[in-house]
Amino acid sequence: MARIVMKFGGTSVGDIDRIRNAALKVKAEVEAGNEVAVVVSAMSGETNRLVDLTRAAAALHDAREYDTVVAAGEQVTIGLMSMTLQDLGVNARSWLGWQIPIRTTDVHSAARIKSIETDELIRRFREEQQVAVVAGFQGLADNGRITTLGRGGSDTSAVALAAALQADRCDIYTDVDGVYTTDPRIVPTARKLEKITYEEMLELASLGAKVLQTRSVELAMNHGVRVHVRSSFSDEPGTLVVDEEEIVEQQMVNGVTYAPNEAKITLRNVPDRPGVSAGIFGPLADANINVDMIVQNVSEDGATTDLTFTVPRDVLARAEKVLEGCRETIRWSEMTADPNVVKVSIVGVGMRSHVGVAKTMFRALAEKGINIQVITTSEIKVSVLIAGEYTELAVRALHSAFELDAA
Image (cartoon, rainbow, N blue to C red; front, side, top):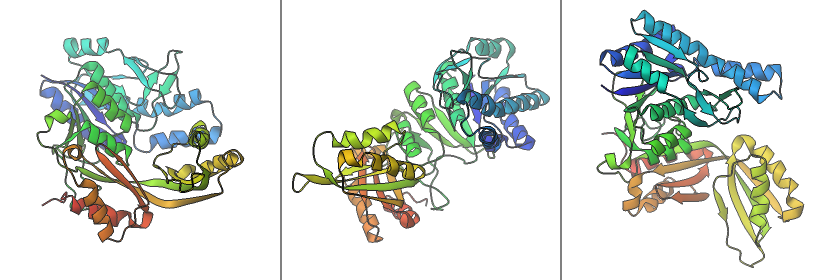
C-alpha cells in the first residue's frame, strides 16, 4: 500500500465529464489499496473570471478581499469532485485550506506555506479509508484570513501536502503527458523524458517551461518528494522528477527552453565607480522589477562603461521610468530598450562532467546566422539572448545539435 497525492489542474477538471474522468483515476488508486489525497485547481478559466470581477469592482482593491474572492474557484471544484467520487462508490470528503488547516504567511495573493496539519487526514485514511479532496492554491494566515499562493499555487499545495503526509509520490495530472526535451509545438521530434532531476526541472521551470510551477519544484527538491508529471487524458506513464542519484547516467543536455517575455535595456557611458550598480538596480528592486541577465563591459578609459540587462517585457515601460528617475544621480548618457528579444537556454546536469557544451551551442547558432547578444551561465545551464524572430530556428538548431531528437 502506498500513500499518494494526486493533483488535477484546471484543464483536467474543466467540466463535469473531465471531473468524472479524474475521479475514475482516483478510484483506480483506491481500489489498488492506496491511501489517496486529491488536490484540485479551479475549473479552467474560473480563476481568470474571478480576478476580472475583482478588477471591475475596484482597481485598487484590498488584497485580503481579493484572496477571499479568487479562492472560491477551488471550493466549487472540491465539492464537485467529492460528489463524483461518492457517486462512483468512493468514500470522499472535501477540505478547504482553512479546514485542514494549511497555515501560511499573511502576504495575500503570494503567501508561502509554513505548515500543514495532517493528523485528521491520516486518521481518516487509516480508520475510514476516506479520500481527502483538498482545495489547492489557498491557505490560512495567522490572523484567520484566507490567503492564496499566487498563480500556479495548486502545484505548490500538492507538493507541500505530499511532504507533510510523507507520501510515496505526488502525481501532477495536466494536459501534457510529461516533460519533453523542448516544446513539441516547435520541435515535433521532441522526446518525452522518463526521468529528470529536481535541479534540471527547476531550471527549466524558471527559464520558461510551463509544465510545473517553480515553487513546487523547490519544495519537492527540499523535501525529497518524488513528482510524477502525467496526462489526465491518458494512462501512459509520464515523467518522474527525482533526485539526481536516481538517474544512472546523465545526458549532457536534457532540455532546450525559451522565455519570450524578455526586454533588453542598455545604459551607455555609465560612470565606472563603486556604488553605481547599486544605484541602478536598487531602485528597480524597490519598484518590484526583476532583473535577470546582466552584462557590464570592460571600461577602456577607466571612467565610463556600458551596462546591459534584461527585465520582463510587460514592465519595460515602468523600468524605463524608474531609470529616468535616477539619471541625474547616476549620470549615464543614453538609454536604449529592445522588447523584441528572447532568452533561449539549454539545461542538463551532465554539463558538470562534459566539456565543450558552450562550444556546441554557440557553433549551432552561428551556423544558422543567429547573433548572440548576451550570455549567462550556471553549473547546469547556458542561456543566450537573441532577436525574437529567431526563436524557433534557435530552438530547433540546439535540439538537433545536442542530439535530443526522437529516433
